[in-house]
Length: 75
Image (cartoon, rainbow, N blue to C red; front, side):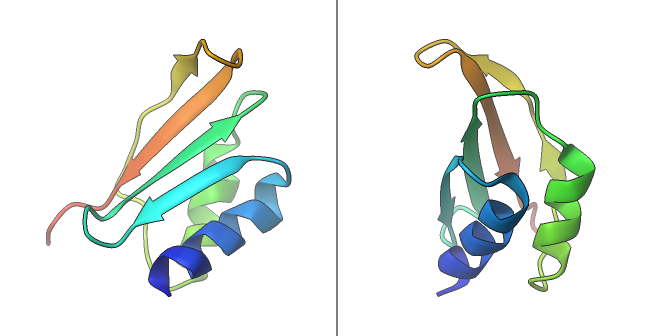
């Protein structure tokens, strides 16, 4: 259920985005049509009780958008 909560929180902020999350890897991947608002994404994730520790924005050529792999590092 953790994955669903994180995806739902991000989806509320971003609207139409493809989001997948994995508790096993401690990461989420977001595919957007436009540039991301990283601060809003971090805030949405924080409200679920998790935090974003690393964000990498890279072009996503298949659909001409952006991809954001979010990773949670071991503490």
